[in-house]
Length: 353
Image (cartoon, rainbow, N blue to C red):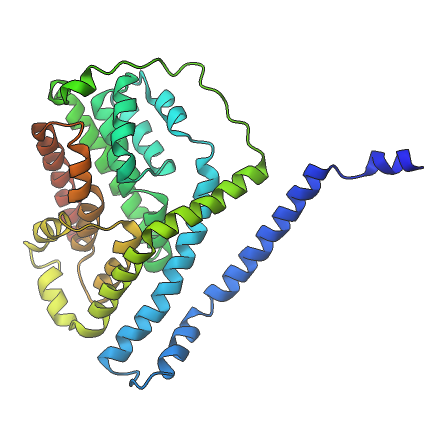
């Protein structure tokens, strides 16, 4: 009788997986319940303060109290999901997929993988060295390095949650197009000689025979949780700063002033937005609340997205990091090509919308 019971007993691993899935379902249900009540929560918080809700300060505080938990909750959910997916795309596997690919097809693949394998600026140098030394063409490498920080899961997830799916999908399409075209142009210019000498001299073994990492589903869920801890710990301060700036814009900047400065009729607004965005040091999670506030105040979509793209793709800190592997001439070409694409996107959006 005991043998028959053991035969039909659920394996320990299956029981653990079922428990994790049940916990995940409970978490998602709680997440949705809280998320749908954030507006009421923010209004309740403002009502507790000695501030008139209709005042500029009351408007700014309501924006801050609503956007702070909203952005952090969206960030946690998106990072967790992509953290699980990312376990299937290690840097070594990504490099192996891109090595030996021709330009054109390689640029498209690299940009697509950049979305699925979102590495930050801190990873730019080792990834660049690994890609180039593995035989990945220079232009294909740049397509990946442009797409990874700019068209990543955080940017798309927050855009979708804060300003709607149309803007998110449009940003995805134009961001990927920019990464593909910019990488292809850089590849056509044949600038391999403009790499730093020590990078050109590096020789590493091929990527064949990379060990396959066997992870259980529970392992992947745990890595997703670890990704949330790691990324939220790094960006929460920038998120608060970004939401604070967005709240100030939302509450105190007159709408007609914003339309005059960043409206579609101001032709100079797009290049000005790009120049303003380059020296800023923030990430997608920090800049998107500012984008939300700018759009809400009447700023043109093209101008706003040009600002966002320049902050993420052409930030000064990333250029400083890339200086370790690129000559100043190559960095100049990279900035010129990407900035031209961002300007084209900004003007085109303002023309269409």
